[in-house]
Image 1 (cartoon, rainbow, N blue to C red):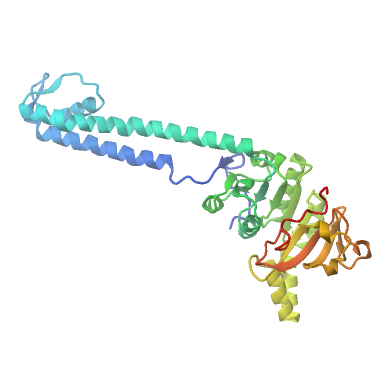
Image 2 (cartoon, rainbow, N blue to C red; image 1 turned 90 degrees about the horizontal axis):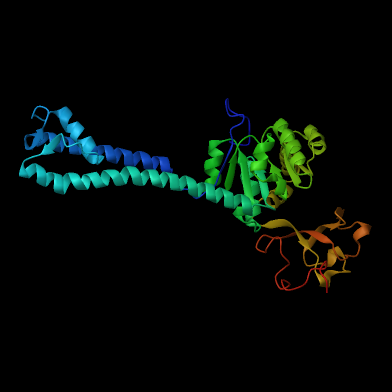
Length: 364
């Protein structure tokens, strides 16, 4: 679980940006190729030593095992001092048709791999730079545990692109999970401003804070609010008594996880059917869905109860009213509706058959 963002020793100031879609590490590829190069080196040493009678050493005329190692290294590296040389026809043919191709392969492995690693690092730097340039009006999700993954799944299911989501977490497991889901990750402690800045919080439309520690959530909320006074912050708290503190820290919306679960358990005990309905509303993609949508032009002046959707609330001038409140007896331009509808429909779109209608807050 990565809902807990406590730092590990020595990681207080360590953070990095990493993007998904990296199949394997370039350093792993480098290690494999170095092993292949060592294999070529060992094979060539053995070949020269077995055919040592076909070589001449200007020092003493005899090629020992040490001389074979020496000759192989200077030959494969194209240094070639000339103090040891093939003299027999067999040794010369082996040099021409075996050792020379081995030399080429050896150089390709080492030089080519080095260039690949450098190019890979350059590509990663370019990708991150492009990502930063395009990043804006996105959602920063702090914590990619159970709550974080559920929040992201809901956002994606309602049409938000993966490129519009940035995960902040300290866990290597969260990094792997987020990359597997195709999401960008900033690894670091979200209570530190520089980590949130790396995630682009200054340009983010929303920040969702989902860790399991209320103290971390409060500090993260304070940091995010300081970095971006205009962003919308949704934070989770475990205990209801901390909800007011979270609000004071700058959260616009606070979800009490333990209280919500306890209430659902209580409702299920009092009325199993009501509990089933509530669970259905909280489960995405099946049964009923709760959604917010714009008011259509042909719905202006109508009563909330008369619409095809089951209206439960009306948002007017950024205030939420129950559908039966006298203030919203008649719907007006600019209203938004909180509705309950079938999950088979598009949760955040007008009902089928009215997709081409103008919204009521648009000009005629």
